[in-house]
Image (cartoon, rainbow, N blue to C red; front, side, top):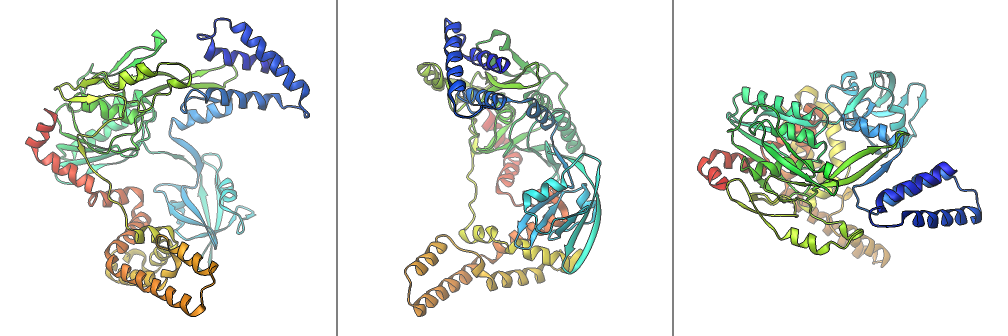
Length: 527
């Protein structure tokens, strides 16, 4: 008990020592409080669990990014930085009224190699009958140690199949796509920065250039950040060796330093357009913001998330760790990208933070930026919104059910029978339009029921709703056909094939290509 009490005292003193001149008085006060609570509470307190929860809640008072992790949680985080989520069969699965089924398989993993298909219903894993298992129960059965095997029994229509599958570590991709998308333009999709991402990125750039690309589109939409050191290594592909890409500013002078590229660049002249959105975060913002500050590329899209705080991990002897905000990132121009200031939680520096937000900063060529509000694009774009009809169909099971049916019926002829499949699909949606609700339709249906409409008028009104749905289906049949086609591409060509297909129609990618091909306009933006 004394060990845990002392641990929490030490933990609290870490945060408040600099602001409380007599920490011993505070610790004595907390010690008395803790003993009084422990001695008088009606039940026995599990001290170990209590202290862990106290540590977690204490540090969360600082900001939403700082955390305390137990030894087990710390070990799991170390695996995550390698991109390893878990070891499994490599299939996305979903709950349906028929049971848990395969949604789609991941390329190169056990499920795809063993021949599992979308729509297969799990009925047995090794010797365990799982036909009535829910999604979470089945996930626990399918996961295990990397390299181990399991026998999976599935139901495919009326046929029972047994597949032997080898588990494999499911590794999150740092780079999910890197290829040419036209004769001269290459496209690289960067999801996050993990261990080794810098070398992978440089290799991807070189491979795309070797295929003939002399212009690049970098897709950083939805980039969740990650290891900043890997972002710097990635930046070395485009910047001269020794270029400073960010500085750290902290109250701890040892944590204040500048970081620069340390490798010979792949190309310092190839034109770049970088796609960003409000889900581009942290080290993804360091990468894109540094290129903007150094006038090395044109940013296109939406303003980024605005997370410019630096978290560092500090380990305790027992293997637990403190992941704590220790500094702020500042880009080459001097601006900080942090959108929200959390200092009001523990100091009175509001005036200083507001002054920081109003500062003006300049890029290498003299372009003017403001600070503390994320990264603003050079060219703003708005995401296209889907119609209410498309959203309603996507929420239903219609796409999945019909895609599974088409895959089984047409097999290798799936894409040569596109016109035939499209006609069947549109008719299928029309015939089943009572299985999805348009916006506010469910409220209307509920209103009819609760107000006990006359049966005749209720049926008449519902028929009118059905007719309106069918008219909308006719008006938007091309868009409806498209969402099925995307699902079939995912089944046949996996995630990479779907991204390639979508990129050819993506208005942001097309705009990026247009900017790159207009050389004078591209240079004008940067100068």
